[in-house]
Image 1 (cartoon, rainbow, N blue to C red):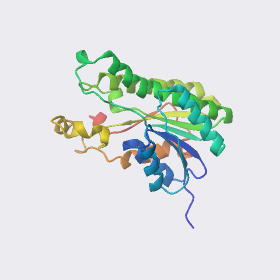
Image 2: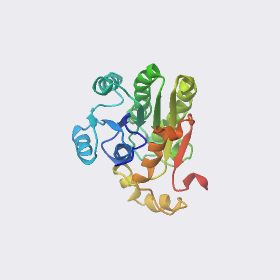
Image 3: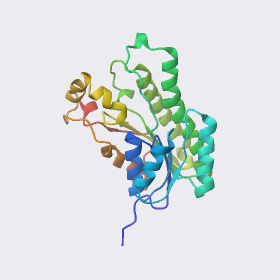
Length: 250
């Protein structure tokens, strides 16, 4: 017999699940026994994910910056499964690598809308369900650049700093009502989002700043997400777990 996984029977919603870190997290959660509910903008990516994992997967495409769409997704998860036990907010963008004085207002707003406001929309929608049950775990994906400066990523860094502040606020507000809220702060991982930067002249500088001497593989973040969703982390809330190969240990 296969031993039970730490998330057997639990419904976990993953945003940004179609690609990159979100996909790796979703695969790991499914491997731990979770019943997945997955969201991204593109249905085709979610369908490919569903074909690659064992166990049930609810495919629910949406744009996280659209609050009405997010609320509808949360309601549909409950309608289909009867519950919502976990949320991992992986949806995020970093479309610009531009000096701050050249950042356009519309580009700034777009990054904040997706990364920070979108995370809040999902936390709020999932939190309403979890608070009614007095149980649940939310994991928000931040970045080492929430606390460590780097050139040309002003909007991205600001959005991730906001995510960590939001995480601490929700953790304090919801702790005595059974809902835990933590964050993951990844360093550099090779994904579609980071490939252009890592393959540019900046790649050597970035890798040289990592004590382990390499960027991460997406699967190396996923275990931390499984831990934070599971009961193994039941006395953790308001924390940020950094997974960065030692970047912030220097």
